[in-house]
Image 1 (tube, rainbow, N blue to C red):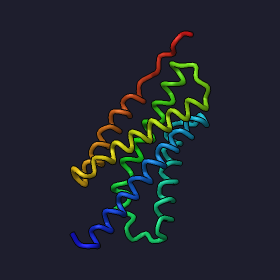
Image 2: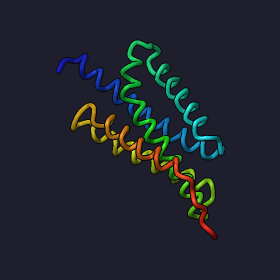
Image 3: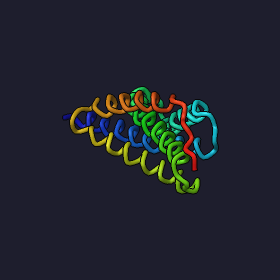
Image 4: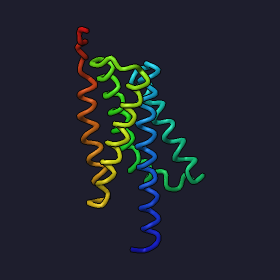
Length: 148
């Protein structure tokens, strides 16, 4: 493989890792501030574009970065939000521990998703998009509060 191809792989891997980190952080902060999930998603997407634009100072490869970075970002954002909401409803953990557990869970799931890169360059994208659809369906359900 040519050196340019290796450089491109490093570029998209960095964007995917940034997507995992930004998504997990955005979902956790959105839950912590108790803002609507769509507003949290909008803020997370804006932060993701800012991180990608500041990454190299050039917008030349932004399309490729978004293609491979946005699905892991969506996955970790939705997962951290879903985990935080579920822990808030079903446990008596303090909000700090709930946020920390949601953040770590999303980071682990994002790392596992990125472990699919050796199988195919498109495998993490497809897996993240499929899991994100499932998480959207889970988050659309009306929660049933648990009596304590």
